[in-house]
Amino acid sequence: FTQAAEQGWAQAHYNLCMCYLTGNDTAHDEVKAERLIRKASKQGLGAAQFALGICFGSGAGVVQDEDEAVKLYQQAAGQGLPKAQHALGGCYALGRGCVKNKEQAARLYKQAADQGSADAQLDLGTCYEYGTGVATDHETAA
Image 1 (tube, helix red, strand yellow):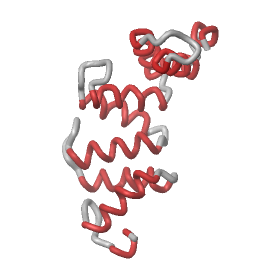
Image 2: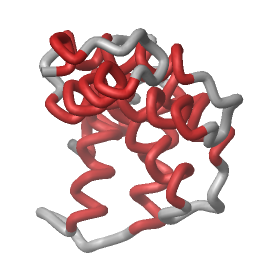
Image 3: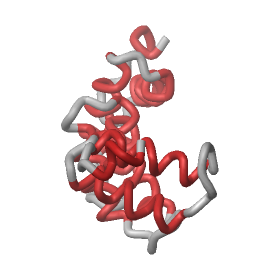
């Protein structure tokens, strides 16, 4: 991955970052991992944007910044990543890093659920069960 990363390939930056984070095939190095994930994210790699969003949302390795997490989730969700759509839906559902919007949360859960995300399917079912952001529909919830 190192040679491809040195040539500027976003996927290689991301893969090398994961190696540094896990210590697989290289020494564990969170500083190098953060630098690489930021590069891959700036290059528009959705998986990197989602992963960096998780870091900002939780404060893992960076200063917690829910607004920045939402921006990164939006970028990744815009590329159709179901995990990012689900995470962004959670932000809208709770008003974390954005204005609470239960309808938008349900729409994002549906986008991710339609792509097979079990977590999003569960959350969307809960929305239908309780009428959160959608009309109550027990049949659809089931």
